[in-house]
Length: 331
Image (cartoon, rainbow, N blue to C red; front, side, top):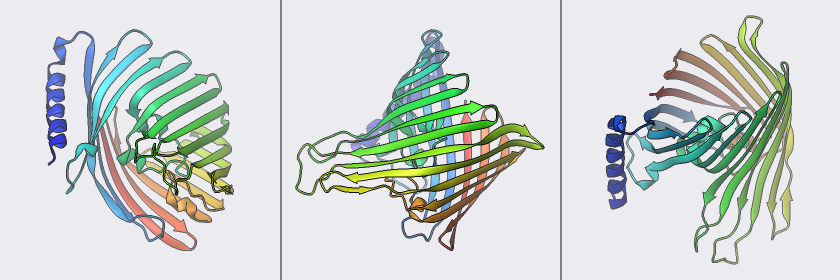
């Protein structure tokens, strides 16, 4: 284990001891988030990576409610993959300020991606980000009033150095709900700029996509706990500026979600041009793709949630499959 890793481990030990003695701090609360996962991906598709993601994330934190709208939280999001080695990359600060008003929710710092970005389409942001880039490092502003909800976010991926490029993700989501009928738009873009010392081969890239969708969503519909049907159009903007290269893929996307007690079924179908989204799911490089998720919720209580998912991926007349067991614990 490297010296930096030892320092991180000692820091976590001290942090946990601080949690254990939190009673001595006025109005400061401590907590723990635990996420264990076993995700086996039997992929044959040329652009995907077959792997088993097996391990857990553990996040101890302290929080302080300043008043009715101002909130501050500091913690450490830690990753351990079974059989792996521990390095400084396994530790991510989760420290942020949060303004929580009646219509506006604003965060600034390093905060959980799962809490705020899990609803994004996989075409835009792949689900492996929830394992390996668990925090949004930047800011997010959300507005919600009556039938309208808006969300803007900025995630700084790489700070510019002599060798590292300046890279950041940003996006906007908007939704209008009228009874069970909704219209929704999701957008994200990666801005891939230059290192401070440029090389002749450096090219500035913009890698973005947008999904506009309309649909029907209602809880307690017929005998179902929830039903959602959505139809949309995806369009991309993939540009290499200095090379004057521009690609604008587009295609049709359809989603179906059914929930009944402990069972969940979700199906997503895409047909159109292949999308080369750097931070999107690589299955969407295909011109025709269907994903069917069969989910079993073993138990779901206020503090514990356990979910098994069997996924079938249909890519241009071929089948891939995936099995994932996830456990969430909060205290």
